[in-house]
Image 1: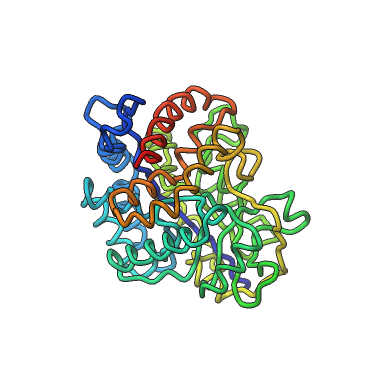
Image 2: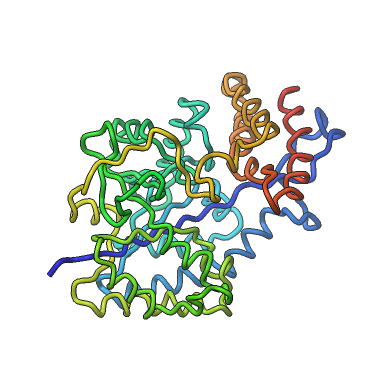
Length: 385
């Protein structure tokens, strides 16, 4: 009997959001992130809110499933700044993540500490942040990740070559149809120009059925039940693995509890494991169990965001481009200062979220105006320093 596996991967990240910062603060007040209770972007309030709605109930449910089903496993990536905020403001949530990893059936991925696009702008900074993240994972979980995911799954051939030289066994990417052509995301692949490293591609259609369409009553497949979802997978002929990659906040925050998302999660393992040939796998188990189906060539950068699936969401307009270039132009000065508070501030500003909020496509225009109003004087203050 052929074995087929769900590779479930959840990503958790929260940036340090900017406080209300104006041009009148520049050169006088270097507090960029510590908000107060009246600010809608208060970092502590956001962590506590999302922890209550998503992280804690999801972790409790996952731990329950791990104890109940021997063949249930999953994968997580947790940004460094996310873990840092849990340590500061929600230690019980951090403990719940540690409890999951302690089962031995939850694999952690490596990434940049500050959830940045540094790979494309400053390679030494990128490598420094990857090292910072590995150190944080070792400190909190006693694990050394062997699989790499770049921020927003931003991937190309060059990144795969870097990851192989860095010693990673596998790397993650979006399974984008215009790149794959006739190929399916439901297999293990080898990246172009590499020898040993493996590539796992997100099945975005199935992942997005859960992450985005689950609670949409106008969707023709609503309501989505675990039984229906597993039937789709069982009827798929061209598959060895189903890579379900999504934001952790899918459960409880993006899809609210009253939409039935936790019931779906609870019933998914039982429905899938009812078939004797089905199982769940960690990243490492998948690349050990299946040989590469083919080579995937991605010379151009592909991400998992928006309809364009490229870097447009972060650098698609002149304002974004100028801001990100100006920030990385400060690299040598920031590091040379040996002022670790300034360096930490500079790195927190690299979080891709700040540039994403400056995107002027569609409904994000209002957010762009707000974030740019905070970023511009802040950047001027850093230049003064």
